[in-house]
Image (cartoon, rainbow, N blue to C red):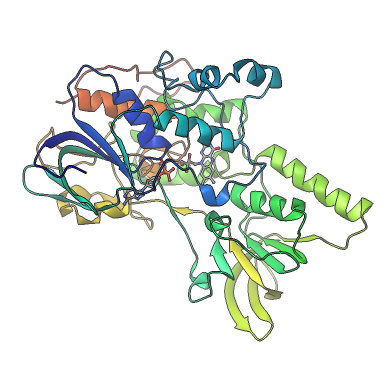
Length: 436
Ligand SMILES: Cc1cc2nc3c(=O)[nH]c(=O)nc-3n(C[C@H](O)[C@H](O)[C@H](O)COP(=O)(O)OP(=O)(O)OC[C@H]3O[C@@H](n4cnc5c(N)ncnc54)[C@H](O)[C@@H]3O)c2cc1C
């Protein structure tokens, strides 16, 4: 990698769907911008550790990297469908949500065509030299006027998991990363969201099934993702802008209130698990192939001569102890400051708040600071408490990238203003000011 003293206009850290979308929107502009996007992986990959055979997307395929803001882009999902000669078959299949494996294939196809992507480069940290940002990588330093962090969310591993053999207690996001011996073993899955449900469904359907499964959650039931029409309007630009203009306390309350719009389990997956349990118990005569512990919080995991003892505290009543061989933690992801940004000056990070170290960001997704107006650090997927439950979701991916692209370009290259909706959100008081 060239580590000369060329100054780049934009350096993107991480090439997941978020920065891939931005790279697609910045590609082919006549702006003369010098850009580079870096990822530590050798090539594009998307949540490989949880890419189970049957998993489906939770958003429509047209909410791709570019279509919502640039439907004629050569990097759209329809362009991928035409290029791979699947267009008619997809339409005949009648699906609006494609398998996750296909979304990854699409992103990889796009990554092979979008310029200025560099894989196999790890960003160590980001500092400010008084004039420019210094992006320190394992292959040298880069100087940048603007940096866009798109490093995704880090898996959240609860304290009960620490100190254990990672073959026995691990986060669900690493399930497929290494070969696992699960056949005939006693498995505990903790977490009542989409990942927990996907893992349980997988364990119930693989040919080499575990001896037993206990699925525990502190939630009071296995609750569905609420993607009904009016709730779905939380995932349009108007709402995100309106949300950004609300007082901080209200924003925190709303993220909690609207949890099931993003953290629930797909209805189709709940049905598939229910039917599988019906078949196994009623038709095959199996005794409790999966025991479900609702309203129970896993508090400790202890090593015993015969395996692990998991202790669960119910919402009411006495502690429950369950023996297991393996504990899979489907315990979600940590929101907040991306690790490479830890070295930034305190003026850039002064706006951190909340348990998760959430950062307050401007309407154009740049961190608020008192440095030069044309030197900015933008954050993708790191500001849920500023933009609402849509922030970690793919629905507004293209809109967020378009907002950042416009801000970097200094003019409205992509449409990011209000769109037609049924619900009337008061017009955002936080319209994006373009600076260059
Ligand atoms: C299993 C799973 C399924 C999901 N499915 C859906 C869905 O169907 N619909 C939906 O709307 N949302 C979904 N989400 C939520 C969200 O859309 C995804 O997490 C999405 O991948 C977020 O994109 P991202 O680009 O922000 O981060 P990521 O996809 O996590 O990409 C971050 C990239 O940054 C790189 N990176 C990190 N640190 C560094 C560094 N220091 N140097 C260099 N590179 C670095 C990583 O290698 C990675 O490639 C899902 C999330 C998960 C975990």
